[in-house]
Length: 158
Image 1: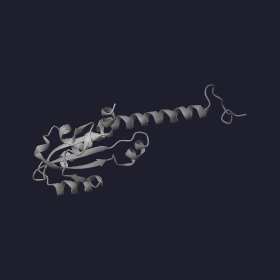
Image 2: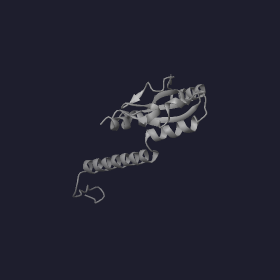
Image 3: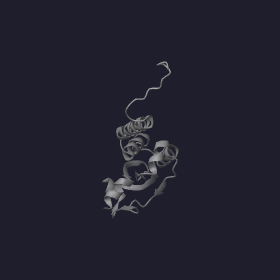
């Protein structure tokens, strides 16, 4: 038999084990990269707060603020003229935001969920959304904001 036709056997692990180890290592590396990327992006609450503050600056009219929320997040915001109606752990939204209720003329609220393919996949493991409150002055213009994530609410209720 010629040496080039002979099959050689190597001592060590079978190919399946080596292939499985390579796949496992690749999965671990991809998961670590996704985790690192997600941490660099900040929390959903931070991202939403940044987007809302940039898209709906103080002085924005109620109508423009509602339209921006609908266009940006695909939600239908709710307007309340009674700014003390909603409470979180017994505190009104103006109290949570540090704004005197007497200086307000209403508030806009909505709930924003993370969007995108990655967000949908992660939602099956970790559900989260952010409540957005836009506090309006007596002229119905944005005066201040309050944001609360589902994770923050869980912590408050402990």
